[in-house]
Length: 247
Image 1 (cartoon, rainbow, N blue to C red):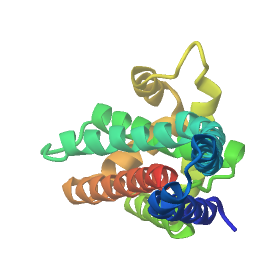
Image 2: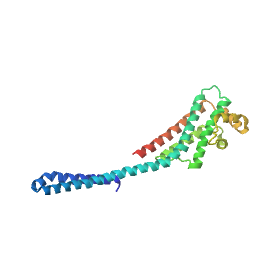
Image 3: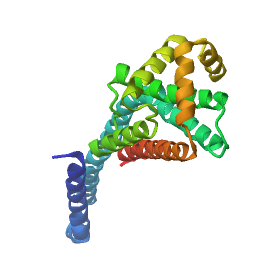
Image 4: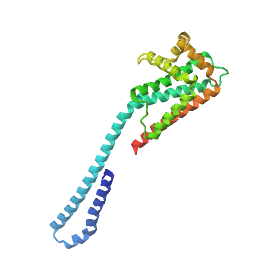
């Protein structure tokens, strides 16, 4: 029997235990002439109500205490995931989406624009890699279908940013490794450094040039839409998770 059922049963017993004697109290008091006897009956009724009230109050207090502890444990579990993996991954998707939206109407994409877009792409995939290595890569959300929806949206982003066919995963791995090696807690790897490196590091320069040749308005649009959908699904999944805790 769960706590809600116990509260209902206790409430019914309290109503019955207090209501029935109250209905007949006038009759009982009318039959008694001794003041001491009347006081004893009244004290018994008050004591009976006190027993039921104490039981109900204890159940309610225990319910909210357990609920608070449950919320705290859930928060302790999920907050590090939100702070270290979910939010950085969502935010990196926003950076890339916003930048592609900013440059998509350019008549042609310069080497610097391509390098900066490639930096945000590198950041996005690096956040994904770190989440996979350190926390399994599968978001913890309210339901399995929410988790599957986020991962499906991620796969659509991969398709929208596939600039070199079967070789794209190899190039992405190189970019991820570069970012993780260069990015330090007290010395983050920033976009201007990446743009400079794209001029001096041969493989990175080749990747930038190939990405620049691939990028056009339609592809920038498609990638931006996929990234926005990824953000929306992830945020909705997190909000649903919060709502489930509150119910």
